[in-house]
Image (cartoon, rainbow, N blue to C red; front, top):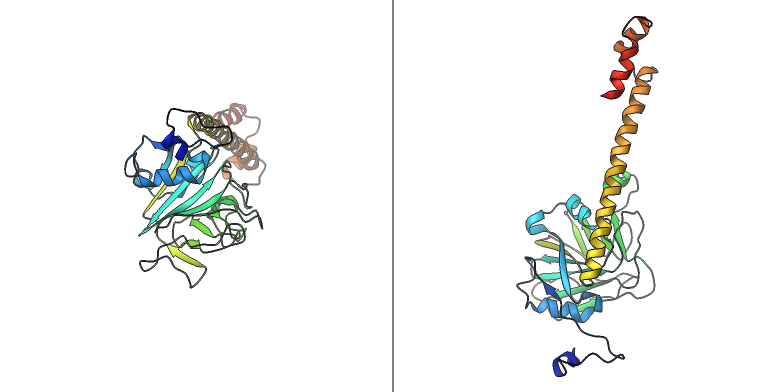
Length: 284
């Protein structure tokens, strides 16, 4: 960063990591313009947080919808920055790993938690003790039979992640410590950063935004990966619907599902026009 200030027209020496100031060109309820101090803070946290930010989701226009949030994340192949505003607190998580739905934690050591407000800015990086980095598990995946937390989480356990956005967005949690990330508070409490009390505190989301980061090339490749993933999911859904429809008709005719209509069909087997019934049913 100092090299950029003192030697603006000279390339960064090979022994140094270049600093690229983060940029936003889309509306944001969190970043108050392109000169937001938050952008500088993020640029200092990781080289992956330099360059253009691309907004994937914002509660301001997308609403607090877990389906829309999940649709924005699943299949996206690049680094993402999740930012939460709750009262006087601004905090969140960064991950360089692609999102997927799973009952287990995944990710790598590029993942970290952070607090922007209240100051001072804090970054909680992996401790190396466990690898419970990130977690995305909806109720629909198991219909609740897994007895795990349903939503998006970082750190902690599958029943109580350290930073947790519940699928219903009720009773979201932010903890002070766990085995995966360094210890430290995420939430503002009574005008100061809490130094004692319980490990986890609930919070209400005022604003939630997710940004794709890593530079223009990485973002564009990641958006293309998400588009391909959506096409694959859509094709799988359409195929499942066709298979289910055919199976339903087979069960219907084989007596698995009782039907007076098909009972009557068997009684008149061999009459004119009966052969056309199956064809008409399969075409609908």
